Amino acid sequence: MAQQHLVNDCVVAVIDLMNRKNIDHIEAFREMSDNLGITYNSVKDSCVRRIGLKGVKDFSKLVKCKEIRNYLKSRYPDSSSWLDKAF
Image 1 (cartoon, rainbow, N blue to C red):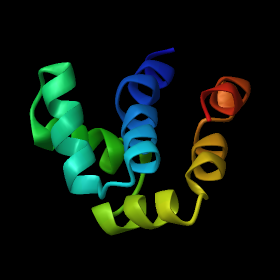
Image 2 (spheres, one colour):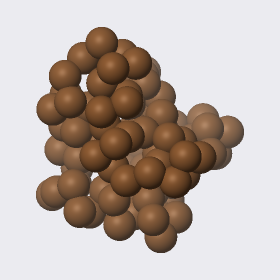
Image 3 (cartoon, rainbow, N blue to C red):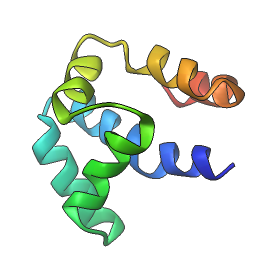
């Protein structure tokens, strides 16, 4: 459940911002850090290291090519149906 909370608060929200507002990860991380009252680096960490990616470029690429949902579903199979609803 904690993993789903992490994905819900940071990752899915950042992905939504990037897609809905057509902004890059830097702007989305900044906006999300302001929205949640946490540091930029905490948001970046949630979207990269905590979901098993090696760098920000990997995250940004997965979002841009619309493969992030599949990646998250493979990483968190117990949250697969929740992720389907989130996207």
